[in-house]
Image (cartoon, rainbow, N blue to C red):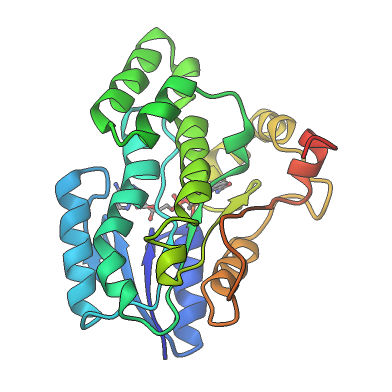
Length: 258
Ligand code: NAD
């Protein structure tokens, strides 16, 4: 069996991914705020450091794959902290344990929203590793108007996708034989979207931003199974990709612009 660390394991895409892996007999170490093997707050530096240390200990020093699903979509500074720094800094802490695996793999969850309007300043601050500036920008936007505050989410995902692009070919990842990729979902039926999709007006707004001509809203399994393949032994050369697993939303919106 392989040892997987799955963040956001208590709900939605992360919970489904962890369950499929466990059903296949793999060892899963879940990280989440509550109801997880490692309970930690990935919005804080200390939470990331603690989570990496405790997961490494539970794995007896060797982690074969990390699947990072934890994320939030609120118009608050915590969104850039969890969705970007909670992935990148946690991975920094888990890298030593990944390096001891025979077939280490990493996959993270970005979003269709990474293509939507965002704050380039917030994206740059995140990629520069400057969490306090990124949070300040998010707070200023939220203070202007909650509608503008929502830019924190697409900004966090744009930064994460771009980080994957860069890091995948670095000494840390390619240099250590670790395929690193992102999956960008469309609209997935999880607790994150349940409230918005519960009214016709909410669903209409979501569908206007994320049109899904193929099979409409997607179950968490549609993302979980791809994350599992990306982190399997079979994936030897797919790296640095942001894979839009989104019912055709990216093809609809970007068209030929690729
Ligand atoms: P979800 O709300 O069901 O699950 C997210 C999990 O992350 C929760 O268990 C939550 O407790 C955990 N989490 C949040 N903040 C945390 C923190 N500070 N520390 C540790 N854990 C924390 O949502 P989901 O739909 O399963 O989302 C999973 C990922 O998919 C997220 O990164 C989300 O942005 C992304 N995504 C979701 C959709 C969608 O339509 N649902 C679309 C695109 C991308």
